[in-house]
Image (tube, rainbow, N blue to C red; front, side):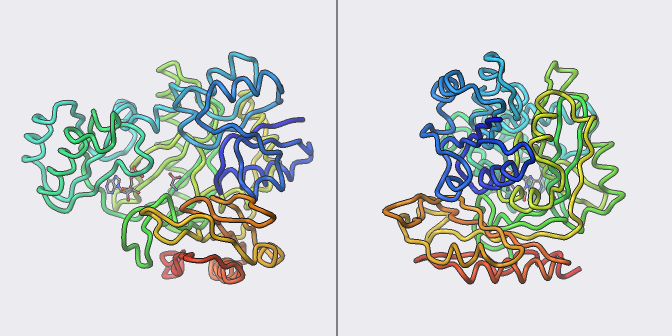
Length: 423
Ligand code: AMP
Ligand code: GLY
């Protein structure tokens, strides 16, 4: 069996690793991949957003399955194009990817199906948006409607900040076309958690919960990043809450998608705020999270190829998905300067030593091979995952792995999992 994975980050490394353990012993390809992924999958020199290039490769190589990691190819309709070629695809169609690519689309879908979420109003006219803002209380959240590489959301403490955020998105177009439409949303108080779910268009099966750490510095300080670390499970999500999330959030969402003619196949990722009134949806993503995948997939006990095939074929009801009880945690090692403009091309030492440590997984995010060495190429460079009998042990393991690795300018958070430890 041959499988193409699309993407090049820590998430895709974890996806390739989980696929590689399958009893099907698949031959893996990854477009474009990275230095870590190339140990598991043959690199394909096509970028993840090059839709015609990927379609041509698939036509020529006819893999049995394509697993799409990032949101951009999904939003550009890669699944639609590959499905036309008769290929099995793990990842939603362009219509389904609107769950992430349009905050307004998702908001309307949630409100129409009574899924708990923040109150919100959508604007295309900046004058009307500013008039509306004057009648709101703060804090308030301003969201560019479209994809903005995770930067389109501004949580505003004052009215002046909110007015500026609206002006920047709608008039100064700092997020390009993504800010033509803006969603102004009620601020939700609480602790955040991510629930990723497998979905085959009909059946939805939640994975174990996770919590990521978006701010760059310890104590949740500093600017937002793609994610600096994560752990699973998130104890804020109780077993009763899991049931509520499945019945009142995930299932009604899939039903609402079906009503709109969308057969959603892939991962439905719910970003939740656990408020005093219960879990509410902050956002949906149309893919695995990064770095949530790096803590969730190491806990998966069921054959991942079987799951991906079942999702793509609409047969998810036929398999039972099982998880390791032991918690996991991961720490992202980032380049000097990240999330601002960052250093590249730094030689990474200690990768082999770290990978030999027990219960430790070294996932590459932004790396490349250069003259027999592994060098940094991205803002997020590595993601180290550890597993343990409890969250404290998992964190001990992960930080031992982190300490074994060095590169110039590297920084990482030293307090991953603090909320879970404080409980
Ligand atoms: P997103 O890009 O949609 O994940 O949003 C980025 C971050 O903004 C989230 O992880 C939350 O911390 C915060 N956020 C988004 N929407 C809200 C909201 N309605 N209330 C409070 N915080 C929010
Ligand atoms: N870790 C957040 C995301 O993948 O969107």
